[in-house]
Image (spheres, rainbow, N blue to C red):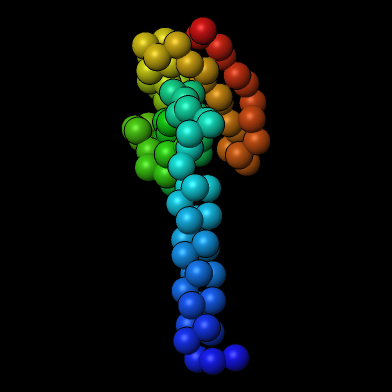
Length: 96
């Protein structure tokens, strides 16, 4: 095969991969939610919005983290998901 055809084939493959990557990275079919998770964090607890890597707030006690999460969830008509210290889900509170 001539070098020119190999280059075109390689470029087409790369372009297809890039297109697939960008199509899959768009969250068109899934809107973002405002669900608030109360999770263990360092020596305390944190509130984290579902889908976010960063935390919204840090707290010493789980009860204060739950209060903050409830306030945010009520405002956005979302859920509060409370986790145990081992990360499993303990409770879910709905504010629809």
